[in-house]
Image 1: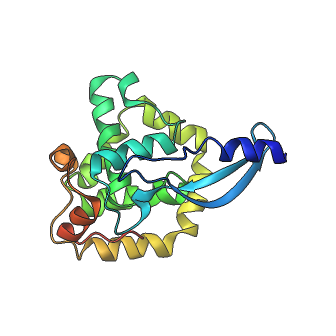
Image 2 (image 1 turned 120 degrees about the vertical axis):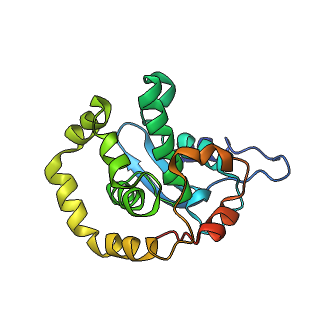
Length: 189
């Protein structure tokens, strides 16, 4: 086990290009298939992240290799998934059930998609497949567990200066997250 840890540590380069950051190591996890691995906290989760949106989305995909790849989906569905993924980054939500619950709440109450746009998402079998795989009971239980955070999200969404432009997120790709969050008054919850 010690050798695998040393090997993992040695995969971090000795020198990094200026401005390159590594994710923050926050925990270690053991799984029978991969042994001990670091759990990384992505930089986009930090309220004051200086990453631009483009780099933060790239980090989001890098930290979540098991996600459906938008490039492998039909164009209309791919666009919805890209908008959803950009929302994860802008609002600082991870892909845990709590994070998914919060991004769904942000989407309905704090973006130009609103409830109508959110419901559009469910017209696609890829989305329904995800919900079926996770399980509706499990999703409901998690929603109840994070109800205080859901209510905080709704309350904070009313304080936004403007709603996040769900369909026009690409206009902000080269802006730092901290600047975007300041402009819209977005708080990572």
